[in-house]
Amino acid sequence: MDSRLDRIVGFCRLIDREKFIRRRTYLTDGERLENDAEHAWHLAVMAMLLEEYADEKVDMLKVVGMALIHDLVEIYAGDTFAYDKEGLKTQKERETMAADRLFAALPDDLAARFRGLWDEFEAWTTPEARFAHTLDNFQPLMLQAATDGRAWKEGGRRLSEVLERNARTHEGSAGLWDYARENFIRPQLEKGNLENDIPDMEIL
Image 1 (tube, rainbow, N blue to C red):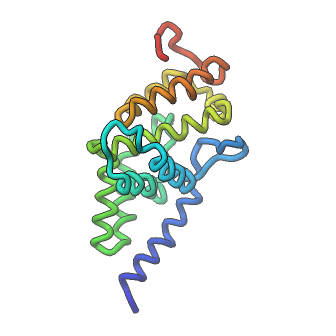
Image 2 (image 1 turned 60 degrees about the vertical axis):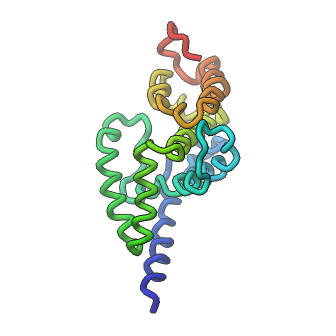
Image 3 (image 1 turned 45 degrees about the vertical axis):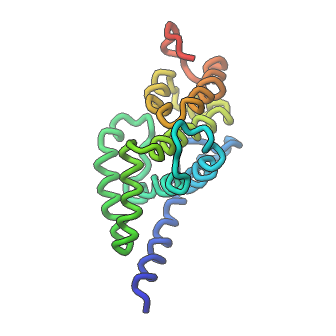
């Protein structure tokens, strides 16, 4: 029996659980919320399509890898809602513990490779990590706009919250952030689907 292969297949089976982790963003038809696996797939394809808009030269294989694995730790840590202030306080600790548990299921060499990629994404210090984070924030903004801000309306979201959430989105691509502000955020403000709680601020 090939114990290495058995561990890898076991990990492949384990990560199927990502499909059951529900996020708080609606799919473009507005009928149901997306799950983590759908989000990861979407980011990976978007990375390839939007590579030319990265502010720095990036290793696309690494960006795609980050997109595909960045939320795997939520299998154990759960999804932390972007606007859950209490959950955000413990997110790093919970997700680090989850990463320890998750990647330990792999053979040592693969565990080091996958954990290293996850750690790099979390650190925001490389061009690939910055671009992956930009995409990670750009994608839900795009879906909010596609559903006329449904989740924003349901949650009573305010502009200040969205801007705080996206304070670093520009770091991987100023162009994509500018596009998101003009095409995703501004129209929802004008429609009243996102509360403008900073009306005196020249935001867009």
